[in-house]
Length: 321
Image (cartoon, rainbow, N blue to C red; front, side, top):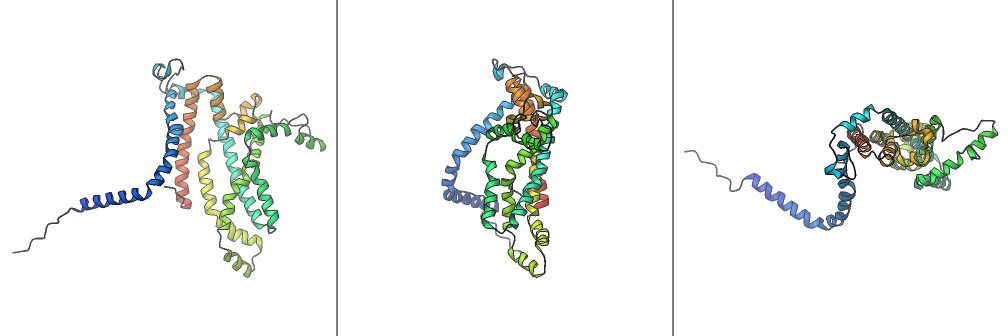
């Protein structure tokens, strides 16, 4: 007679549930002070970042403030259909993509080149002074910088046009001509942030093993060869991460900067989605249409961020979650 196997006294899933429960209780007892410290930030985020999201419902309504959410008529996708048939809206989307793309393109290379050049400086005081000077503009708001640029680019006594006049060049309407306005916006954005953006590349360069440079020097490599064979490959993973994640900002052309620099003369080539929403939504009192435009931008931006995040993970192994 074959011996029967003893039946288990406890089922494995039951043991696993109890083990998981004990781990959770143990984890909570150890970390509950940290969760309590985090709680105010979570509450503030819920109140100021997530609660207003319910307002996007007016993108599907003909919202009238005196009727409220419940009394305003429901129009479905009508505001979005109006958006894609609105000539100014299409021009605004094109302006946004063009200006943001050129900004991203410049932000890809200027900070990297600056970081590589700064890394080659051997005079410590000069290096620190240069770093400090290029960081400073990042901490100035566009409200201040907007006033400064309006003054120095003025056609009447602006320092830039006075300098061009020395060479016999006619004064240029930098902030009143659409083409020059785009160039001014892109260059001023680079001037403001390239120093601060270079920090991440300087950190990547600092993480390269110095023994690689010593070995290359022993083998006879000059500074240029060391940069091209060691430094550039060393920062390439973080460069790929920065580039791919920046794709998610292709519809974010910078409201603060444009709003403080533009005027009705350059609306055709300088108006972007954010400033368009401000003009139409707040100044024109078309709340539903402006919300539809903003929602369209947010959805496209979210999709691009997801795509860029997956690209960063695939090409550089970068991931947060």
